Each structure stands twice: as structure tokens, then as C-alpha cells.
Image (cartoon, rainbow over all chains, first blue to last red; front, top):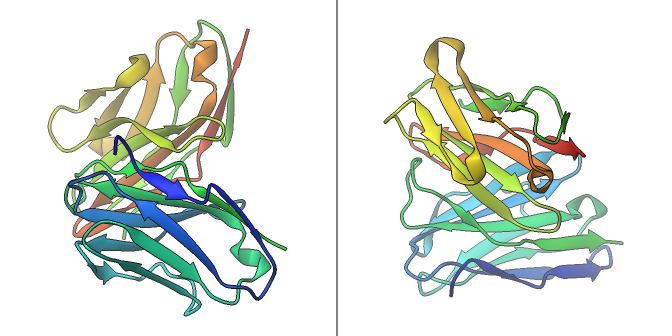
Length: 115
Length: 113
């Protein structure tokens, strides 16, 4: 596709439920990143993939958060037993390759609200 | 460790006036520096980036930024603000084996007609 796409665009869930957020990166991009944007915390790095492997999971806030990537393309971020503090906009980005100088292209985000 | 500090969470300028958004970085290795813009209800869009080539970097929409190592700064400027520049601007740093971006807290720019 032309850009990074994410689904759903909005998600409202009840505390304790599991949610899955999806990211479709730009075709041909080998690196994929997940960030979280919340009030008071700014933009936080969560995890990145090079191909299907995740060399850096250091930003995942708890073991309720997990992510996978299959076929070197689509990625899913899963939050189990959601809490109200998980409410945020979850942003996905992709880049041609991993590496600090590569431009990351961002999707529009998924706005998650946990009631 | 890498980080950026954006001074001023809100900046207001008159239409046609100079825009100056400040960013200072901290990095133990030569940094790569980025400015992103986020329009309401949209994703982040790259304005420009510094990757150790020219210290004055020109970006889209008339924006530019100058890397000053002695001041550890990468301030964003535009000579004349347009109403369409109203948005939130984020400075970010990467490098030294860190593939992810470390973002500042953002500066919301308001343009007054």
C-alpha cells in the first residue's frame, strides 16, 4: 500500500478484556516499530521488529503486552487484561531497514479507550 | 543514553512571523535527529532529518533546522508562519545502535491570524 495502515482506528473496551491492534507496514519495509502516545507520557517506544524477530522489546510496559510479526509484514500488538492506564494512541511505523538513520513512516494510529 | 528536550510545550506566533521551535538533545554517540509534525487526528509526518551530512537541513513546507554540536541543539525554524502550520511538532533522536526513536514531549504551534 501507499502508507502504513492500522486497524481498528478506534477501539473501546472494558477493563480486563484483551485487545488486538493491527499494523500493515509499507510494502518492502523490513523494520516495524510500535509506539504509544498518551497524555502525560508523550511518545514511548514499545517494540521493534527486524523481519519477524524482535531484537528490542525493552519498551513493553508489562507482560500483558506482546507483539508478533508474520511473513515479514503484518504485525499484531496484543494487550491482555486491559487496564485503564492502557488508554492511549498506539502508533505503528515502518522503515526500509533497521538503523538509526532510516526514516520511520508512521500510520494514523489506533486510539484505545479502556473503560 | 539518548534524549531530547523541547522547550515550550506551546508556542504562538502571528501569521507571517518567524517560527522557532527549540530542541536540545543528549547523546553519547553522534546522533541522528528528526523533526516530525502531527496534524490533528493524523499520524506523524517527517519534516526533516539530520544524518551527519550538512548541518543545515531543509525540509518540507519551508521548514529548516540547524545542527549545532557545540550547543547540542537542533532548533526548527520557518521564516514566515502560515495558518496551515498549526500542529504539534516533535523532535526525536536515534543512533548508537538504538534503532528506535526517542521523542521529545512535543510543542504545539498556534498561528494567530
